[in-house]
Image (cartoon, rainbow, N blue to C red; front, side, top):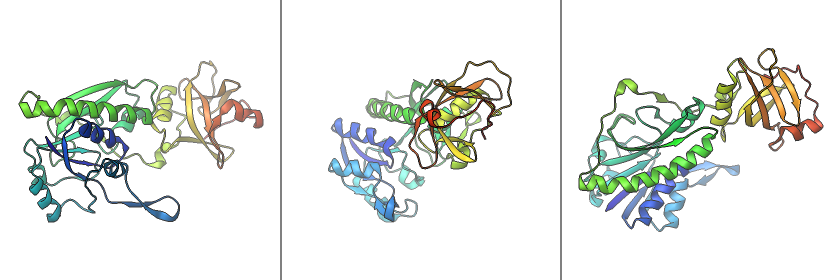
Length: 309
């Protein structure tokens, strides 16, 4: 089996490793171009490029894919059985989608047609979904709209976006290596998506991280889980940004305006919400490392009645 692999972030690394482990030929790995990052804005390779180089695979990182005759000619010369795409970050033109013998296959981090778009995993956690999963699908020129081949699910309860990313990246890799041989021998399914059921998962913006205490405690817990590990949910305490790394549902029964501290002690900082309450367990103040909120309270007296936000 000859596979051209296209991917960029850490989510796409396990599938590349599984393809190599299966003994399938990978004549080319395509990633997004190197970008300046970190102190000094030094050029940094993406996770897939780093791993491909470690595996001794040929890599190309073109600035553009559309209207790139050199890349298209190279793909036609390779004549792959499959092109596998996982969080590559660029849309492929129809002329490229038609190159592989068995099609362009995408690993998508949701149970399609729900959560098409750039941030399906994070949006699912933010929504408080009980279940999410991965979809192996045929690619179409419209984003995430191709026919579904196979799916697999995970439970989301209590998991952060970071934990869901890690679990789904491995699940997607395993599902891919199960699915590709079935496509080749004609036993794989193919189910068109119902566009009426599609939802859009837009990229998460840093500005979305602020806590809206008028929401329910359950919604705000999902917010904390969904914003971890980027950009981190936050509120304001004495005018400073207080990042919230970890929280849990509270049990104190007390009428108070949303955002009001209703308990403060060794169990954490409990805050009234639109309904219910949320206990802040791990917080981070400007210029400090994240710390247990009970430890924070040893040096900072957060009175009940204090209003956050």
